[in-house]
Each structure stands twice: as C-alpha cells, then as structure tokens.
Length: 377
Image 1 (cartoon, one colour):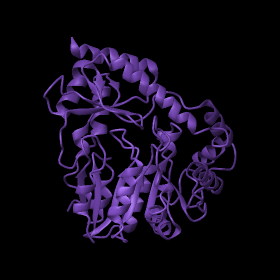
Image 2 (cartoon, helix red, strand yellow):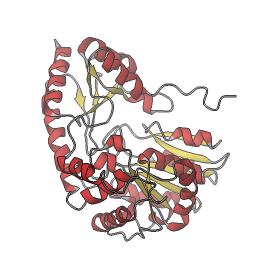
Image 3 (cartoon, helix red, strand yellow):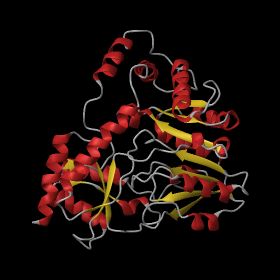
C-alpha cells in the first residue's frame, strides 16, 4: 500500500520545468537570482579551510544559537535560552515537518489556513491525522468565525503563516487579539507559526508570536536564514519554542537529520556579526516598488503586498481561463512563468489570481514586464 497515492507533482516543479523547456523568465519559484553578499562567500572560503567539517551538535552550532537568541531579544524583546529553546533545522520545511510529527497523533485535527504552503499537509497525513483546510477571506485576512466553527477538542494544532505566502498579507494587532480569544478554551491546542518572511515587511511592521505573551508558551515559531540572507539553497532554518515543547521536536529531528550542515552554520554565525537584517526589508521594498511600476500599465490588477517577495495579481480583466491554464499559457505564449493560486487551496478555489516572485535582479524584472505588456496587444 502506498502512503501518498494521490499526491501530485509540486506546482513549483511543474512551472520551473516549463520555464526551462520554453526558455521563459521564471518568476514562479521563490528564490533570488542575484548573487549573495560577497562577504559571506569570503567567510565560507576561509572557514572551509578550518576544522569545521564534522557533525555539528544535534541542536545546532552553539555560537549560532547564541546569535539567534540575541537576534530574538533585539527584535522581539523575548529572552530565549539558546541551549534549550532554539533548534537549527535543515530549512524551515524540516522544522515544520518535525514539529507536526512530534505532536500530532492519529485522529487529531490540524487547521490550515488557505491558500497555504504545500508542505503543511503532508506531515499531517503521514501522522494519520486530519488536515482541516479553512479559506482566508478574499483579502487574505483570517476568518475567525470559520476558524471558531472548526475548533474542537480534536484540534491539536493551528498553522499560521505570517507574513503570508502567497499573498504578502501580514497579521494585525486585532487579528492576534481575536486569535487569543477564540483559543483560550482549548489549552491543548498548539500554534505552529511559520514566520520565514519575518524580516521582509514594508509599510507595516511584522508582529511575531514571539511578542505575544498569551501565545508564545504554546507556540513553535519557524524562521529561515535562507529567506533572510538570500541563501535558499543552504536550507538552514530554525525553530523557537519553550523547552517542554522543543525537547519533543528534538526527538524527531535527531532521527530525521540529526544535525545540520556545519560549515553553513559556522559561516552564518560569523556573517551575522556584520550583517544588519534591516537591510533585507529595504532591498525588497525597492524591488516591490520597481516591479509594481513596471507592470502597472498591464491589465493585471495588483493586490496589496505588505511583506514577502511575492506579488499577487488578478487576471480577471484579461481572461476567464482557469488559473492553472492561464499560467501555462503565460509560459508558452509570453515566456513568463508564475504560480496559480488555486493550487494553494484544499478545494482548488480559483479566484483568477496568480503569484509573481520579484526576488530577481532588475534586468530580469524589466524583461518580464516587457513580455507581460504584450498581453494587452
């Protein structure tokens, strides 16, 4: 018997292959195409000649754990114990998988807010638990009435993604107040907060679970150096949680990967002494504004982008096609690869919206815009 017989090939794999096959500009998969900071490549080159190539400690390279603790204190005024409340993971995806596997039992229910990252559901299914997919409102704010209706004693976990992929929406203070009210009667419910784009927000500041006194002791918070430092291929993430929760995740982690790349951890640790994470938001603010200005003459309707490096757009003024069909036609006829949003919904809800990734150099964004302008012609 197969455990995942109905699991399709990821849309990211499909669109990236189409982009390669048709020599299209790839604005689908979320990774930067510009060079990383030369300072970190120099650090890697130097450290690679030192004795740093054996297994790192299971929980993470101790100096890096200290750096993360200081980063958390500086940005969120939360004091965490680097030895017991932080875990370095093989990317944010491993953190998500390990957290779910550690706590979700057969027949439990886990709430996922759609549209959602496609890696949330699989570890739930592999736990023989039930994913409960609840759609966000059309403006991508949480629907607390719908969430309340689905909460029960079976609800083991609620997965949040803030800043939100694919929409770029960020949660407000009022959102968190409402969340705190509706879950107070469910003391066994845990929150898995995916905050990998935490340092990529624009006009409004990101509110982290790290700052919520009523939530942080029942939460597992996922972060990503891949997103923050433009190092997606390094697959280095981390998890922050109270010791009583994190020790359970470590039990999964030690048998899943045991430890994470030692050279990468040591290099990031040293780089954090000279890198200001505030630079990240400024970089992507410029790119967001540049991309928005480039395609404002097209017939796409741009939705608000409050964070992340994704721009969501409606194409309802262009076509009535299903979004999957429309994105495939964008590749074959216009040479631009994007992501349809329906694939992020459990019921494949199609709102005629697609997602662009603007984490690209200006020349590539300019070329993409020139191609997209031809849709009007």
